[in-house]
Image 1 (cartoon, rainbow over the protein chains, first blue to last red):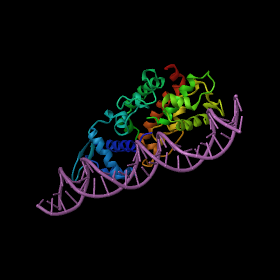
Image 2: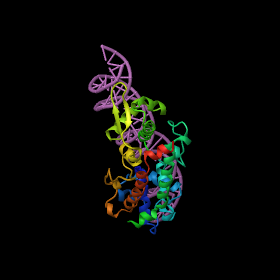
Image 3: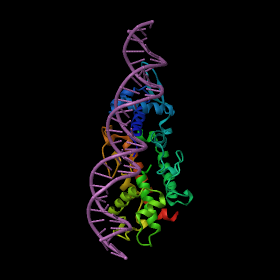
Image 4: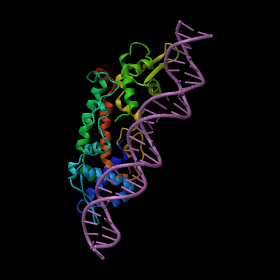
Length: 138
Length: 138
DNA sequence: TATAAAGTCTATAATTTTTATAGGGTTTAT
DNA sequence: ATAAACCCTATAAAAATTATAGACTTTATA
């Protein structure tokens, strides 16, 4: 399951995508629309900005706005950013690799092999679904 | 990512699969082989037994053994049993459904729709990989 | 130029989940 | 009888997630 953080990020991105042509959007408005804690959402938007998905304008009249095209924001990226690895085990993670303590030799481990396949196939799914797909479903 | 519980369950199932024709296997042996806490593993094996994957023999000379064919143990089942939902959001979970608080109308939610697709495609992967595939990779 | 509105940033608190341990019970081979 | 092994429930410890707090900076505008 995704963390609330990631789920909220998706809601925020969707909201920003829907209001793409209306200039900046307040954290407050997104938080209120979805009943999310303002402060919690603030941290999430900050991460999305630092990762290059959002732009912001400070001061009175400021707010957030999308700076990437929805079609260029795949689920895989958002999930990796806020939740971490997509792989089911650390020993097959491309971006957050760590060896598994209980496995003596990774190259001899059937779990490792199967999980690497699962990772590849899962990645295909999550790289192909983008914010655009979400927006089309609204 | 899978919890350690699920990861340990997979190691245990693999071990039992490899020793399928040797009668019962001690919790102790599996725990030692993989450096897993005996007591923690005990609880996991208990769950696997209650779910119908393992049989056990009590008393001296007892232990655990597989009672299902490896090809009839898909990853999806093991994950659901020990980790819970495979879906990325509660609002699209087939087995652990819960509405999402931040979404007013599920049928109008683009995230919900996309996540339902992701669930279906993910499920295809995890239902098709079984313990047999893991055993073949050892 | 004072003020209020809005994002920035870091730290910490609260809560929940995961991981691990403990210990007494029951069964069974010898 | 005894020791080995699984059974079961409760609880403790640790880690991760979720949420809050508060001081700071920037900016529009009256």
